[in-house]
Amino acid sequence: MQILQHLHSVNRWIVLVLLLLTIITAFQGWFGKKTYTESDRKKALFTLIFTHIQLVLGLILFFISPFVKNGGGMKDPVWRFYTVEHTTMMVLAIILITVGYSIAKRKSVDLAKFKTTAIYYVIALLIILAGIPWPFREGLGGGWY
Image: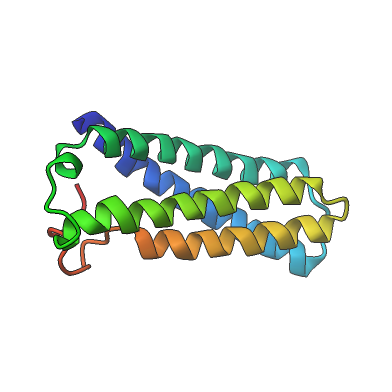
């Protein structure tokens, strides 16, 4: 379980970096009226792939975690955060990234591809940032694993 936790922890940074790069590229393309290139598509695709890897790692951790199985229930804020809030927000963000990527790749106009990617990925990023168990969040057991 330790290895999975570390992989989940390291992959979070990969996801955040890829997400930021994709969003910056999407805004530059959208407002700069640039051509949507294969490189732009690949950035969005790799972001999608790494978010799905993060989802798989998170779900495995969720189902094998003794903390989840033996937790204190809804009255325990740490248990509730990891089993309900964190999980729901992350799944929602990954759905938005997946839908955004799928819609953008079907668009025929480059500007629409950039705009769609930017909007969906920014909303997903905001949800992810809200759902991360930041070390400074009170009541979550003092930080990251």
